[in-house]
Length: 308
Image 1 (cartoon, one colour):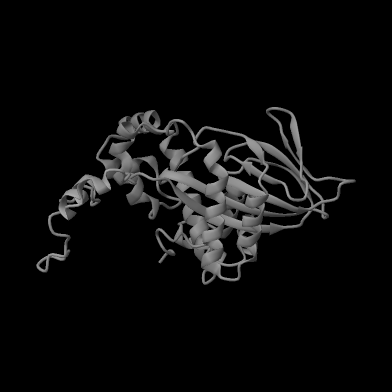
Image 2 (cartoon, rainbow, N blue to C red; image 1 turned 90 degrees about the vertical axis):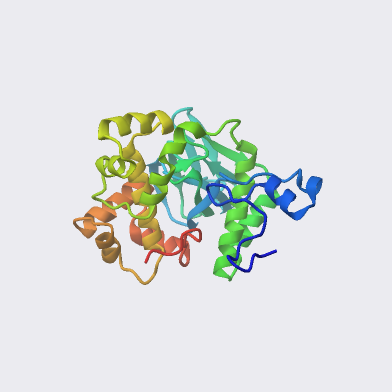
């Protein structure tokens, strides 16, 4: 029921953050207990797609990706198999057709692919706050025995509708991570609360010149005090968060086919296109051009829209 004077739902007191509690809604509608099992969805994690890659190329490299990876092996040569090796454990995981692998961000690994291998890969994050991942601090690569998930990944890449393709990829990513859901969030909500407004404000404005001093000024703190409190709350330095967020903005700009790599570098205040390309490759293992070719079309962050 709308209040004709202000367009708001009559009788429902808004929370300070603009959301409405289930209890308030139940009281306002007069349905009482019918809503007692509603769950408050505030603070829910958000899947943010980075890229969808359909690869068949030979290489042998060491990687530490800054995002999660969900991959499906479509074909390989059993006589000369491709594989992933985890240096920390010495474990080697062969790629077998139909096998699904899930790799957590920050996991050191060596990947060896031959031209006989073809794999579909979804790169993504699962964020609680801008730049704060649900699996922060965890590492590992896992083989998932799920033919149903393999089919969903194939369907995502085969879908001709670009938006539905992204929705299918997000669904597959969520299905993959649920079994690994942490018992506790990676950050203390009370410690993180004072920084939320700064993180949301800077995520879409951070560039190559943004520093810790800018974050501290936005929060109204001294730089040393801000740095200490930030690290205590998130387990990373403000500089690490800025690099993460700068890379996120770079990906969103590169997802827009109307922009050249040079224009993306200019918008992010990099001194040269070369420095921008080097930054992207160090963070992802791919050049800006490779990321664009792999996505098979723009991967826009739908929660914020394309960069203006």
